[in-house]
Image 1 (cartoon, helix red, strand yellow):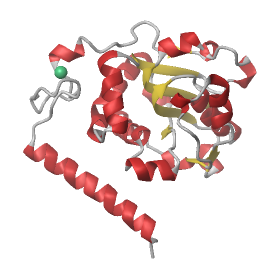
Image 2 (cartoon, rainbow, N blue to C red; image 1 turned 135 degrees about the vertical axis):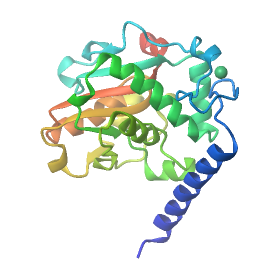
Image 3 (tube, protein in one colour; image 1 turned 90 degrees about the horizontal axis):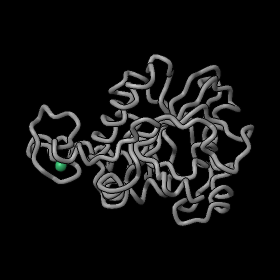
Length: 249
Ligand SMILES: [Zn+2]
């Protein structure tokens, strides 16, 4: 018998899916940036006016280990990070609505945009699975959804890579990274994650998914536990990177 909490979560998830379905039927999709109505065929859910304003990271879509300033190369566990956009302008505003103002349906547009950019620079056959950065259950319950998991599942659907986010869990509740100073951010995520089944991770090539990159500490900690569990390769992909914040750290 499922517990009351699981039952509640199940009902919330089911309700979200039904609402999403009805929304699509009744309301044609809108541009996630300006709310302009779109034709059904427009997969990106971004209108032609807004697509030109998206601050895409053009030539530098892959940051390798060197971007982690002040962290020894041996302490960097991921093999690289793909960044779709800069965290500024209309993208920053949309991500804030997505995370804090219930606009969970934006995950489709974010995943489509990210997949489009990622496929241009990386052979997707290289990856055995996608895994999202987990939220603590308490936070997921308050928000009603894990914003990275929604993107990761959709990214998996688009690219044909299975989503195995259940293999990574957050074992410690952490404070919101953006409210903390650099050193506090590092301590805040240290030992916060665990791999739930090492057998499934061993020897695998993993694409780790998150919404926003700031210091990279969270992605690095997740990569650490995945690599220690035997993952062969861990690349991260984010919708947006706060390049300004990174430069100031
Ligand atoms: Zn628009």
